[in-house]
Length: 332
Image (cartoon, rainbow, N blue to C red; front, side, top):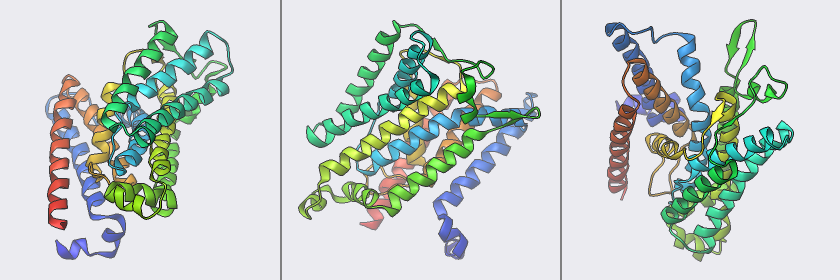
């Protein structure tokens, strides 16, 4: 095992990521085997993969964003409802006010940025606990989305409509074959996020805040600015998540989004991001998103209720957090 861990390729990729990739592959074939034994439709087919990816796109952007917040030692429980709020506001302005699609997509991002700035201000400058501030933002975004649409669902244009070009951000059909362009989009943004977190001054300060905020402050760093930036990045990616959500699905309903907070946070924790802050993995979060998405698709394929996903995800989070606590104790 030690020789395997010390292998140059494994060390470059990261042992934890290799393990997660192995778990992802094993889960896929395990679901395929169980579905075959149960007499269900074949799990190994292209349409199943496309369905899995549709869920992973917006969840991936939420997970990438909240990774920055968790890296500071904070938490954001509003990302899912902010995503829905942005999609509802943008969709309402598109369908009822007749604004151009491109402007409505930018408004989706702007809504996310505003909530990110609000969360960052409350945590960094007002000194509120991130748990409380994000819960307040969750209720606020839920309420604004419902009030703005008068509690009515909003349907974005289909791909065949004149205004449906934005759906090509998620998938395009060429010669009868559907190409998941959303996966390319997500990978590019994940690479950019990884570079920001690991190769820039902002990323280093964000990670340092999670390790020892007081030491960073005493060294003369403006901790409020960098802590606020983490929430702004998170909010921005929640706004982008709204775009890929409406690109994959047609209808947005007010009052929803809570469960996606949990899935995104679970993906981060599973991927190696420490809930105590100071340690984060963009690549691990990406793989965690794929595992959560596969878990949902597999449970539905076997004919079980989606509630079983919450049970299994909860167990996974407990195990991941426990492993993180044990790891920190060993390091200390």
